[in-house]
Amino acid sequence: MSKLIVANWKANPKTFTEALKLVKASDFENVVIAPPYIYLQTLSWVLKKAALGAQDTFWENAGPYTGEVTPSQIKNLKVKYVIIGHSERRGFGETDEMINKKIKAALKVGLRVILCVGEDWNTRRKGIAAAKQFVGNQLKKDLLETKNLKIKNKNLLIAYEPVWAIGTGKADSAKTSAEMISYIKKILDSRYPSSRAKLATGHSQILKTKVLYGGSVTPKNAKAFLSQPEIDGALVGGASLNQKEFRKIINAQQ
Ligand code: PEP
Image (cartoon, rainbow, N blue to C red; front, side):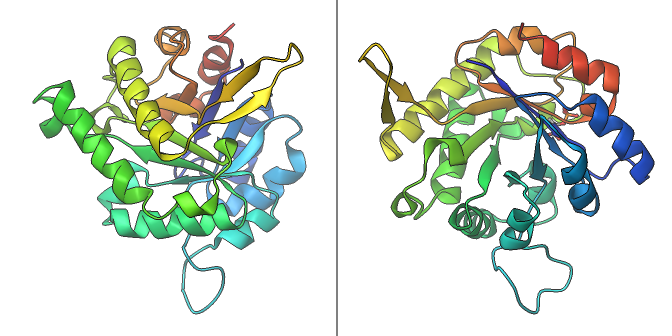
């Protein structure tokens, strides 16, 4: 199964010309590009293979909400994915309650949600058990009352992003992040029993929610993460802004 590589451009690049150059170099199957909102419309006309994602959304679909961009506006631009709950947004004061409202609104209009969860260093230095408890709590709060939305497995993705690993050059180890991702999958399995697809052989295959790793993924460490069976892909920040580096990360799974 091909793994998914998500490029989170954050508030980059500075000009549309640079965005165009970058997107053309990143246009591959199983890639999601999440540029700033302002570039989404035009980039949707250019991309042929990669999918587009927004970096955030609001929880209402229209109304007097200055500065917000709504799930239905994003969906109408033919954007497939939306990142919700990124630690940088949580750092601006976004709470689990706000994240939960955004997730529900995005799922209702049919967007695929990439929910970011992950512990800070204060928690992680106490050990992996403390980190699991932290992440488990985030999932519980962020996914509150989503069971009745009948979520299709492909519409909910999780990115495990230890906060201390984002943009620091200090990635988690592939082994520990795989352990955390198995734990996340166990929680999701008990919440949303996996749907089964019949294969041509007559056997059934369990379709699980994809869980990605994010946090200082580079061409050097990408293979280690992507070769872990539990890890379904990577969310890449800094390295997605460099054409050559991003291409190497995409190729790391082959
Ligand atoms: C991110 O922003 O989600 C991220 C993982 O960034 P970086 O790859 O730069 O650590």
